[in-house]
Length: 323
Image (cartoon, rainbow, N blue to C red):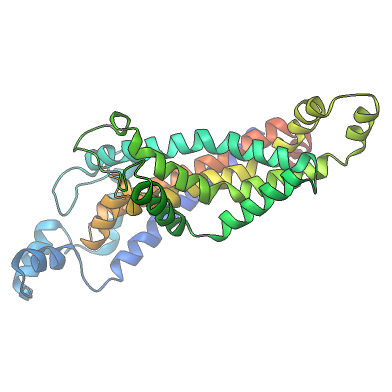
């Protein structure tokens, strides 16, 4: 098992390197850089080649691309994410300011997402074809077919503009914690849950339906075990061990989902700063943020692998057979 995890961690490091290299190459392929963008915004007119060359030298953009990539990579490994080309501030400080807001939104959503999808999936799969199963299945399919930005707009129109129950935008004072105004988190979280919960719910439902037909479940039912105890004690452990990766996929989807929701509700998280950095060609910030988000997704999947090994004897047997 240790060897398996070591290989998984090694593969994750390779993926992070590829992500960093792809982002760097995409930046290099753009038709402008931070110097050109900064001069165009400040002066309003097209900058002269001399002005661009001088600012490129000041920002260090005149050095060969491999040198700049190697410098960023060596600093990133040491925990130094570089300096923003636009603000001149350490990227680490900017990330911390914004990441805390995004993390609060993502963690609260995750805390609700996991029990919600498991509960709905178990309830629907316990009695296939029942009215509850049809209701949950149709609701999940409907929610999954609607893009997050559409459901977000509908939530704003209904809850904020029509019923006037919650704010339409999730603005926060500079430096304020989102927990100081918890009402601004409700609509973004509901929007995220609407977009992310249908797929894992359907996967849990499918696993539950399959487990409930197994012989040991039928034997327990014949021995007089109650349906609720049968579901929670005998079926749920096997369902959850087989549903770890669909649930992990839902959590990884938070990375992209949070970006959409933050933009839609004007929530002061990482995505807004990332969009500004992309438009300003702020390579160190975009590069560091992209690699950190990829690392978060890889970590979730690695944890899912560990949980699958711990809860599934079959998964452990497969790992041992591959050694």
